Image (cartoon, rainbow, N blue to C red):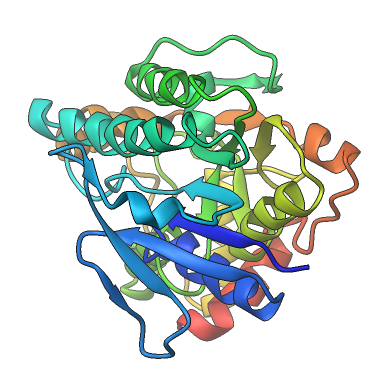
Length: 300
């Protein structure tokens, strides 16, 4: 039996693919967006919301079974200036608050809140972080704590803490592949920092698994086998048939170029996928080699 699912951030990288798969599975999908309208297929209706003005079309929630929030300004799209850090926070907490206000009045609606493995902080590649672990204390960790705190106003919320998403449609992989294609690719910092990643199909698969199995709580959306930055860089170069000619980019250079955002690039975190696997989820792409094979043949 299909459900009615409302997605905040439905036109983004994850939301677009999630919408496609949900429709294929017979669910009804709606989006929240800046402008009201209907997509070309006539299948997806968009209801207007304005995160900064805290305004939303309440009719968006009529007959809805599940709300998923994937909205938020791009973490990697901009230097972390004071104003952009504020935008990163407001785009996440503001969109979540709008949904929370509506869902609290409609107890039958389930809420799946997007979150990030940034919750655990970056810099410790020895510890394997699980959902019960305490948050880190860097900017990304504090941002994620605030983001989840807003969602926790709803009793049966499900948090999905997502790693670096690997997709043939853009995002992190496109950014990582660009310099390699131009023969200026190299590992970043020591190259030994651990990247906890997930293939797009598994990201979407986990969200749908949570919906269809009525799961609540906190789940890490990361592949079972994390990779180091150096391993990822070499594997991308191999798949693109490009040499890596340059030495590693030193951490201090990244700090000059990226500012505080370099923390998330130079430092890593090893995050566990055990909890979602214990619920019966089977990963389509458990290794970085399999994920890149599935993504780069389209991207290059």
